[in-house]
Image (cartoon, rainbow, N blue to C red; front, side, top):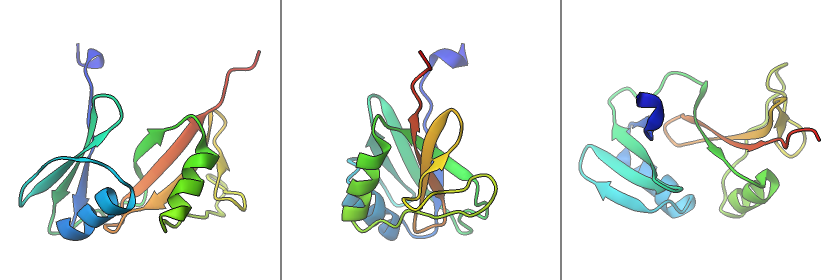
Length: 130
């Protein structure tokens, strides 16, 4: 039954004011609710992102969430115009090109890092072969 319901990610933040500025002012996400412990942002149809105050923040560099988009290059151009740095990786997996895009097999992907160190992916699923 859980597979029939929406989920929402919860990210950790050491400083909610800095996170608010990043997600709302820089990325342009609408705020649904906020209090002294969390900020809930609207993302897409029916989905939400919760950023919660934490004394330790994240200590993990793996991807914490991913947005699925129809045009990765357009999204990256918009993010760059907003002053967001697109990450570059030279590891075997992922390895990004000069634009910060990695071929993940099933999708094209790029990453940004929020002020609390959360790795956020933007992916464009590849169209099935005809």
